Image (cartoon, rainbow, N blue to C red; front, side, top):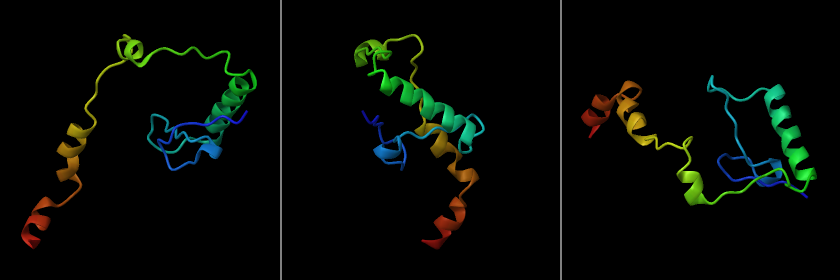
Length: 91
């Protein structure tokens, strides 16, 4: 059985399909990605028996799930990296 992930990155499903960035924001090093791959392979080889599925509704209500506005802080910070005045003046 070939494990296939979602597409939150440019990585195709045949390469795992997942992208993991550690807290430092850079790409994960080989030790981290190797550990993730080995864990994925163990789960796949076991026929996914170790995974428990729950409904979206139940997951959404879990205490560890919280709403977070990713767009607001991103847009608010754009002016710190983009010269908006230069763009405005060019029009």
